[in-house]
Length: 242
Picture 1 (tube, rainbow, N blue to C red):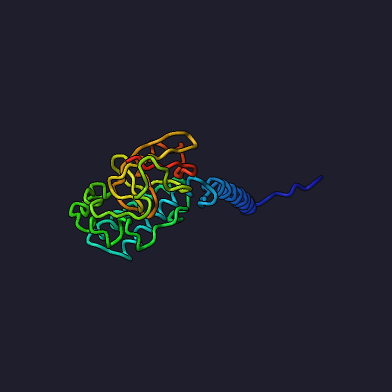
Picture 2: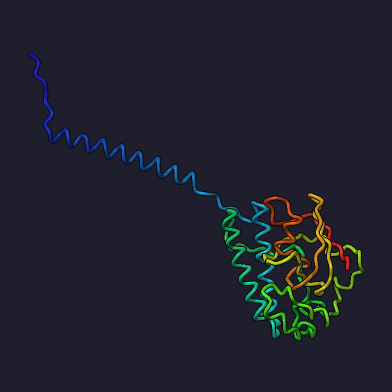
């Protein structure tokens, strides 16, 4: 007669614990793998046109701040504070768009020389230095006296209807308010027509503030000509119309 081997209660418990441990370990590995696969991929400016547009906007605002610090005037502190707030908002947009938060890139359009008499952000510009209303304006949009002392030796001298800023890409400044533009070549009050050749949409806006680029559109103006999901216009035609 065969003898049946019995398993003690303690051994049964040990076997059950071991099985549970193995199963739990497998579940943990599966959960870890699942979580890893759900982790969003963060893209750099080189990998995404959306990220490049945001990085360019961030870089332009940083360059503007650097210019204000290098050549400060009575309104520089207010302008810097405004642009720092804009930079913070751009970083939020970068993170929300799956881009590297804080990544900065400069616009392809070279900044105007520090001694350019037409640079509205230059401390030597008598028209802007005397503008008392500019300091309280969150986006410099109320600057009316900026053009008074403007003697632009660069783009501002272009005739009405002439194409300007050739080869420059266009992105957004991050500023709110009604459709408007900012520039380092054109005085406040100048009207520019920006056409996006990729969708044939155009907007005509007035320059209301200074920036570190030939032309930057604020949020409202950029929405009028942008392609869905893009923060950079690579093929743009910019005309001075007034």
